[in-house]
Image 1 (spheres, rainbow, N blue to C red):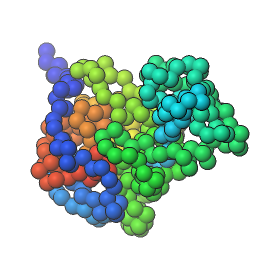
Image 2: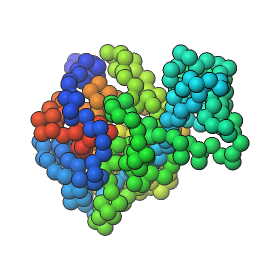
Image 3: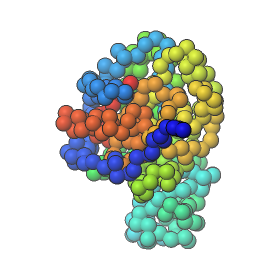
Length: 352
């Protein structure tokens, strides 16, 4: 009796290829929606080249555009250790509870439990524990009403490691979507960086429902996969929130056979986490470590707006699952040929 074949997951090495260094975007475009847009048919790989601002013409009345409204906080701070001149970089990851934070520190080997890190005369912290990922747990002490004004003023945007320059005050604005509202990410949902306020208004005027979810992106988004067998890779957990209104609008659109457009891999991970039955989602908040890689059948997303991602990254694997590995690899080669810019401040891709 023939039961058919089960498609095996691809291996890590199948996502290996070279991105020319000069195509890795080091700075944001002068105008958010003026970047290039590659439109790819996810079924047959046909490609069109457009500007991102042209995307408004591709929506239809009743479609839903789902955006991740997480807000990047300027997580990179500098302190001195134990009243010395030894400079320490403190990369805040998340607040565990009042005044207690998980952070990465550099140089890590010189920052031990019991050390005090001093930011200024009013703010310091004690190193009270190590984390399994090589970070530290810090307890802050301060003589001000709140730590956040200090973080917002003195912190620098946590630019990805492939941007080979120092973060600037301008990055606090450019490495942030125009609709960011919920503080909590240490990395931007970069597919959303291309949207300007006028473009969103233009899309909305076409009768498109614009809705929001929250998924706070952690440092794990930049962590390399270290195993060839993808089934053995574990994602870091990230907090998400799917509001009632968002779930209702998406579910109604699905019933009416309208298209659901998702912006970025983070939005997809959040929605796929809360699918309850068939093609419906439930409003929910919690933590997700969902890792999406081929083969995978998406329940919520009909159109995916994304960036060009690093080879062998979990982000690229999700995009490949939405289309196919071969189509995505071919599209990336076309992007290299046409001098598209890659990664966070780079150009965009639409899969439909």
